[in-house]
Amino acid sequence: MTANKGSVRIIGGEHRGRRLHFTDQNGDLRPTGDRLRETLFNWLQFEVRGTRVLDLFAGSGALAAEALSRGAASALLIEKKRARADDLARVLTPVFDSRAQVKCVDALTWVNRACGQYDLVFIDPPYDLGLHQPICDALAQHDVVAPGGWIFIETRRQSAAPNVPAHWQLEKEKESGDVRAQLYRNGERSQ
Image (cartoon, rainbow, N blue to C red; front, side, top):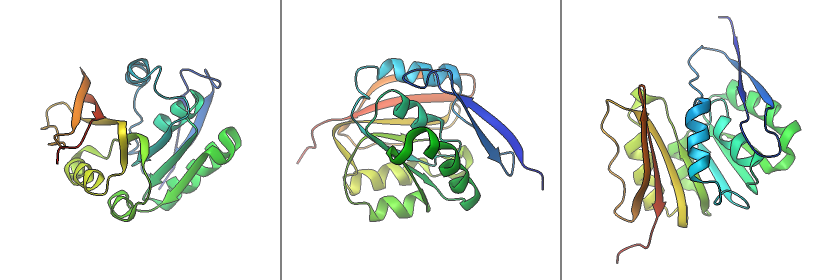
């Protein structure tokens, strides 16, 4: 098996233009593209500074790296595959020091054991594994998203979007090619 080399460019913030190089052992990484990341962070332009970020299914780490470059206080990247988790730590630690933490664990397992809340959560699992719905359900059940926090969900455009909790309010949505991007805000919980 040959490892593919890839890279993502940080679009904005203190590390704007910097390329992060990653190794893709199986050739199956699908980093969020530059245009979609730019759109997402334009939507969030005044919301990122000082946030605690949770990047589930981190993959290349592009979303967390972009948030850190734009002033997020910290980012926790959850990646199930050991080689990818090690690669993420190798690439991100020299750039972001202790602000970027990588955990090698299944995302659903981690959310079901989570303690603490995050202000910005990225949900972008492999499209065909059926993980969008269970991860949204678990995030809501365990109150992982802080009140007023943001949730970004990336899915295949032709697939049904996950049913999100009633207190997650859709703020922005964009379709581009095969991708649907949705940005939700965690509003007040109904009792």
